[in-house]
Amino acid sequence: MANPIPQGFHTVTPFLVLRNAATGLEFYKRAFGAEEVECVTGPGGKIMHAEIRIGDSMLMLSDEFPDMGCHSPQALGGTPVSLYLYVRDVDALFKQAVAAGASALLPVTDMFWGDRYGKLADPFGHIWSLATRKEDLTPEEIGRRSEAYFAQAVM
Image (cartoon, rainbow, N blue to C red):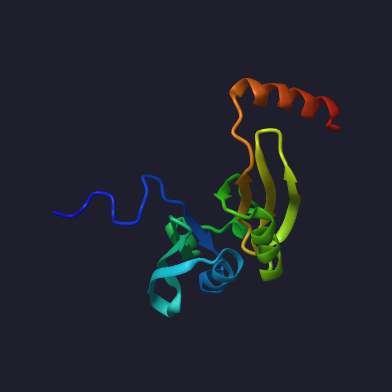
């Protein structure tokens, strides 16, 4: 009997649709140190399904297949989804991702919730939040810091 959750996977696994998934595979290797686990191509060499591992997490991806309802953020004009990636050294990985072709949306900074955090967009329209936990805070501490942060922020 098959394991209901495949070896190496967690309960939730993101699946990204890319315009030119083959280029995406190479980008994720350079930007985030991804390891390609599996890649299945279909007609015309398009990637039907690929699996990569970043750290201890799996990610699935494919090319766009509009006739099957698979559209990239580029086809949709953006994405409401962000992937949050915890790493040991957010500053180093952020620089690596930008050097690989990602666009910096928010530079790495210490945030009120205890993470050192930065945000970027990959060349395919997906948003990545990169973070390293610096402090373990209580909900009350986060609440006080949040109030102070938003009191000084220009909205």
